[in-house]
Image (cartoon, rainbow, N blue to C red; front, side, top):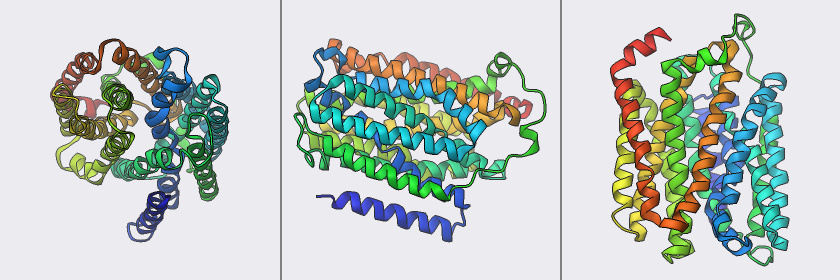
Amino acid sequence: MFSNIIITLILLVLTTFVLAKYIKLPRNIWLLFMAQPLAMAASPIILFIGAILSTSMASDPSLVTLPITMMILGVASTSIPAALIAKKKGRKFATFTGLFCLLIASMLALFATKIGNFELFVLASTLFGAGSAFSQQIRFAAIESTNNVDDIPKVLSILMLSGLFTAFLGPEIAFVAKDLLSSPYGYSGSFLVLGFLIIFAMILMLGFKNPKTTGSEHTGDARPLLVIIKQPIFIVSILSAAIGYSLMIYLMTATPLSMHQIHSHSLLDTKWVIQSHIAAMFLPSLFTAWLVKKFGLKALLFAGTTIYACVAFIALSGQQVMHFWWALILLGIGWNFLFLAGTTLLPLSYKPCERHKIQAVNDFILFGFQAFASLMAGWILLKAGWNMVVFTSMPFIFILIAVTIYFYRQEKKLLKSE
């Protein structure tokens, strides 16, 4: 019953061993590689079953994506506090704070599904978001754990590759463990198993050491926030990451509800599509560092934007399982390219003494956009159908095209001046 979960965990351990022993990754980075998919398994669980579960629990059908929206709002509203805590208490303390929030959220979700209380489930989802805000800071902890700025794309690619394990763990836990405990609407057992994974992640993070800060992080004059965010390099970074991420969440949130509730595809098929999508989000990390080194960030932006245009075309071609599968596969690949490009460009926009402030603002904008996208996904899907969801994504694809063209023309100037 749990064989797929056990196999995935074994593969995670073996992969971490190879990275630590043969690729010689620093301890901090391979610990983050191993702990991150355990901590972040909560998000795909809520994205997969949040709307489906809410169709039975919520009194108002228009609120079915509210748990997903509140999870993302939890990320957005906690992004700035998470960055401030990391600055004052260190990355290790901040990560443990997030893991503790995720553990409490798992127990609340277990209880909510056990008694069939929608409001409590929404609260649990919000706490999942708050905990995930700290987990999102893991990528910055990895950046700070490397001493060479040229290694940032490589480190980010390796860390994002761990998301492959998240892709299988999250939906698999939701599907396999849903009837492990008896409850009116199922899925209580899923949150119990999730709680054990989070405890395992907490044990792993005991070995993490706060990255050493350099003197430059505490010296120099920090510029006003408005000056920093008006920089072209920051604007390109935030637009590529925020639009790429929001469109991904927008279509991904609507997919399980559209497939299972509207088009009557099986839960197994729906799980397969979501798992494939999340795997596609992280699998390109095997070669994105090489792409950046060989062709530059502009190639990544161009590829991600082009792939998103293809997603819209395929999604409008039909509503069979394979239409959803191909659209979501390409959506995941496009997201990887756009998110990696935006995250790699971000450090070029700030000084060391400004990093926590800008990282917090970046995540607040990123997840604020996502929260709005997830809420609108359910409403537009139920009011106007799947095709309208796709049509309303197109203006943002055109914005990505404009950003890509601008970066192509100004790349040398932007990277030289920053």
